[in-house]
Length: 341
Image (cartoon, rainbow, N blue to C red; front, side, top):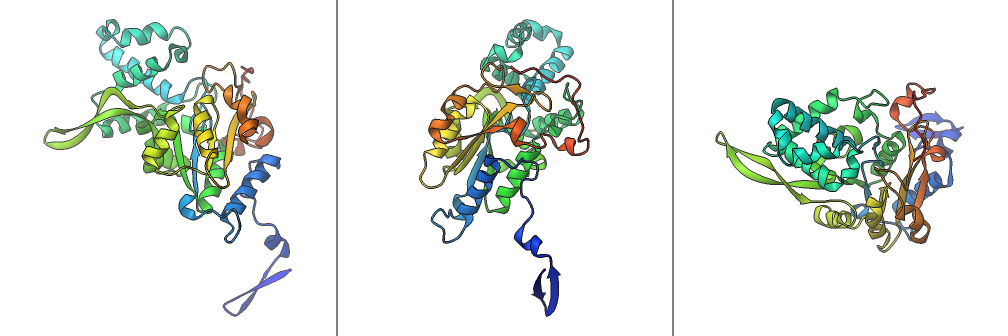
């Protein structure tokens, strides 16, 4: 047994408690990746060490879709945009004959993502143009309260990854600032990321629509326009990091080729660096997909990870738990395990 003297009183503490601090990543299996994560954090926070990084430079950037929460069967924001478009069409059926609604309806017969980035941008612009930022935020919030994931029958915000929540908390406890850097809509994410991840709105980097200032009933408001302002995906991610954060991160986490440039940019800096790809390999608890997937396609990242020193996280083998609700039902088995794509 060990003892600590506190305010003149001897407090007996088991020696094992001093030697074995609590596991900061309990939902991660004890694999080389978990050990590498902890070792990296320990070395960059060890004052006087050769790899010490000052607090102001401890920046970690995370993709969102497929990295912090699930992205199947479609990006959740795309499901939200489709829902909004169909609401508008129910109120005004004549819109079916107008662009971009005609384009959207024509392309949704196939997998909606196959229609391409244009379809997504058209849906977001058409469905939300003319709304104030407050009105748009209310739409997102109300949709998240009522919408359910088709496979798990749970709110979409339940499909966050428990191991990544632990990693975010662990990094913040060690002086890191955590940022979301996503191809998703910045205003869509800002509504719920603080509650889901503990990341405030001003630490979200994402794709944005143009916004204008105007007076509405005598009150100043910001109104969304249909035009895209900035696309924070692929080569846009390092640009977004510079524009919104102003410093190169020392850690970056992604899951698709849309994160490739962010990982390269992060790892190209001086000093200690850490890059990781979430590889979806678990068709029972989540999904298994990479090279041929309609969402979260991963080809270059798999091929080049070794060359650039990125870790590839194997969901099936590296994570004890995928979603937080598994802790409430350890034997949970989805009704229809998804095939490998």
